[in-house]
Amino acid sequence: VGSTAFQSRVVSEKPLKSDLMNFIQFGAWLDPELFAESSVVPVYETLADDAERSADDLFGDQSQSIMLVGTSYTKIEDWNFAGFLREALQNDLLTIAVEGRGPFHAMDEFMNSEYLTNTEITQVIWEFPVRTVLAQRPNSKSWQTALNDQL
Figure: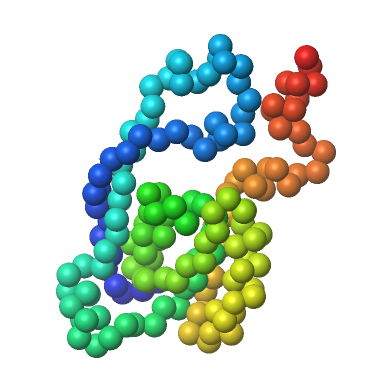
């Protein structure tokens, strides 16, 4: 898509507790933390290559033509979602991301922002978690609800 080289690199590590654990109800005797070791995940940062940064410093900011609209996965920097997109697309991008409100709220923010009329933005990437799509299906139950119905 673009021609700007970005490089992602590991800058640290941190323990990870799945955010899905917040939505699952366990009895104290079945708490996953009693049975599973916590995962340690790498934390990345993505920067433009040195030559690209020098050119930007010399000639000023380059315009961004890509807008990323996202959820917590985009907003929480530890995931580096926007950084990996920059690296893969070889292009810088603008972001609007909202933590804990879902993809529809983030898109509403984009649609009500000055970015919507920005003619330099030619592409919009909407980060949309699969579990949001599955939760929107009519006549579907979560596994937790189905299990509770059996009890």
